[in-house]
Image (cartoon, rainbow, N blue to C red; front, side, top):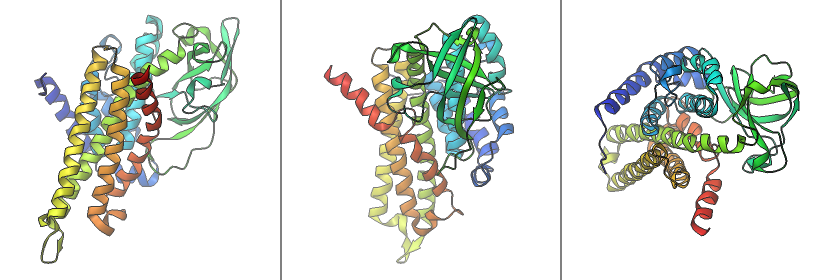
Length: 378
C-alpha cells in the first residue's frame, strides 16, 4: 500500500495545476457571470491530453488511469469546478465509445473528441426518469438500417452545443435489459433542444433538454448490442462519480486555502482570527475531512482501475463522502469569511454554487446510499 505518487503522476498533476492557474482561474468569474462556455480553454486542455484521459492512445487518448484522472480533475476544479465538471462529462462519453464501441466507431468519433474539435454529452436523465433511470421512456424503434428515436432527455450538459450525444434509449421491454446506447450526431433531422436552463451554478457549461422527434439514427451508431445500454451507462457513472468527487475535492481545497489566508489577515479583538482556537479547530476539521475524502476517492479509483468486484460500491461511497464533505468545507470557508464570503468580489460563493449540484448528479447521494445499503444487505 503506497500512498505516494509516481514521477509521471506528479508531472501531470503539476501540468494540470499550471494550466488551471494560468488558463482557467483568471477567467472563471467572468465565465460564471456571463454564462460563457470557454471553448478555447477547453481545447487548450485537450492539447494537454485532458479530453481523453482514459481513452486509448490509438485514437488520440492519453491512456491514463482513473487515479490519474482524479488527480487531474482535482487540480482543474480548484480553478473552476463548472468547467472541470464538463471536461469530466466529455471524458465519460468518450470512454463509453472507446470501451464499448467497435473499431470503426472508435476511429470515426474519438480522434475529434480527444482534441475537443467535437464536444460530447451524456444523455440518460429524463423528465420522468431521474434516480429511477431504468424506467426511461425514450423509444428507439427499428426501421431497416435505422432506428427512429422519440423522447426527451433532461438537464444535459452541453445540450445544444455538443456535437456528439451518447443517448440511452429503450429498444426492448421494461426495465434495464430493454435499454440500448446510441450516438446521435448534431444536425441529425429530428434532433432539437429546449431552452438553456438558468442554474444556480455550473454556469460555464450550457444545459438544455435534448429532444428527439422521429429522429433517424443509423443502426451503425448503436454502441454495443441491443440491451447493453443500461450496463454501459452504469459503468460510465462509476468513473463519473470518482471524477465529480475529485472536482468537489478541488473546489473545497481552494476554499480551504482561501479561508486560511483570510483568517490570518482578518483582525478582530486585536488579533488575527486565525489565532482563536475556535478558528483553528474549524480549519483542522475542514482539512482532516478533506484528506479523508481524498483517500476514499483515490482508493475507489484504484479499485476501478483493477476491476475489483467491490469497485461500484466503493465509487458510491467515495462520491457520497467527497461531495458532502466538499460542500461542507466550502460552506465553512464562507462562514469564516463572514459577510465577505457572501459577495461576488470573493470567489467563495461561486464555489458554493458550483459544488452544491455535485450532491445531486452522477446519481444523487441518496441513490449512493441505496447502492451501498443493497450491497450490505443482499
